[in-house]
Image 1 (cartoon, rainbow, N blue to C red):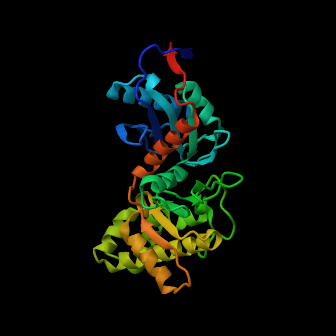
Image 2: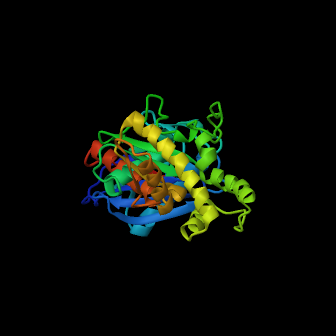
Image 3: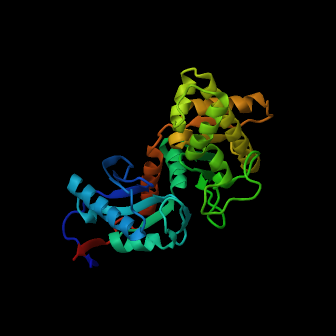
Amino acid sequence: MQQIMEQNSHHAPEAGYVLGVDIGGTNLRAAMANMSGTVVARWSASTVGLRGHEAVVDLIGDGVEGLLQATGRSRESLRAFAAGVPGVTDVENGVVIATSYLMGWKNIPFRALLEKKLGLPIAIDNDVNMAALGEYCVGAAKDVHDFVFVAIGTGIGAGILLNGRPFRGQLWGAGEIGYMILPETALVPSDSYEPGSLEQLIGGEGIRSRWNAYREAQASELPADLSATEIFDFANAGNLSALEFVKHVALVLAQAIYNVFLVLNCPLFVLGGGVGQHPLLCAETNAVLTKWKLRTQPKIVNSSIGAEAQLLGSVYAALDVAKQNAVSPPHLQFVE
């Protein structure tokens, strides 16, 4: 069992560093950055098969040790830590309310568990909110104070920044647009622990399953079992059946974005995630909105930092935590 002991340092202090982590359904990525936000080391490991939060906390501990060893830094050099979690997260109390990707995560006091493990000031947030922060700090929405980051991967979610600050909602569920009900979707809301209606239409798995039915109806010569990005690539190469299918996906996405635009009136939407960042989807969605000849039309762009968004957002969240705490925090020594 580890204990945290506080001690005074009698040597010159090391330069400070922060740690950011992106927790995914298949892997966990960690980065160490200096106090200017420059990443100096990275670490990653598989999360396949991990379900309990204790196992993820232990894996994060391994990642911290790996980064310290790789850089030759001591624990005393660490100033703060932040993690992006794939689920609804109570940021104020540090609790993961629910997640559909890491089974069994319901009302988990994740920040407290990490604080006990690492002995650092810690922030946690929904991973899409972290990605929005990454886009705001160094990505396609740099210095844009009002925008929406739309992540389309296996699922769908949105990170919202208003007046330069994340908007999470009173119950921490703002941006859960995967549950939005649109034409062609269910007539009643999905259960909160199941894929939402919009997600079933244009999430990665929804696209894959709908393509199979579409392909049969159109007698397409393309394979049945294609991923969303593979379908988009075929469309980009000129395959007419794939292109027609992508146009329909873009129409549904345009409807969802327009509905969000009507509520928030944000001028910019950034598309990210493994599916969302495909350039053809962005182009076709913009084409739908242009065809509607709206009086005011939101601008839709691709993420400029791609899969880095969540991880870099976590780094900048950790920097914010470090700045909010003492400049020279107590040095912590971990003993067995």
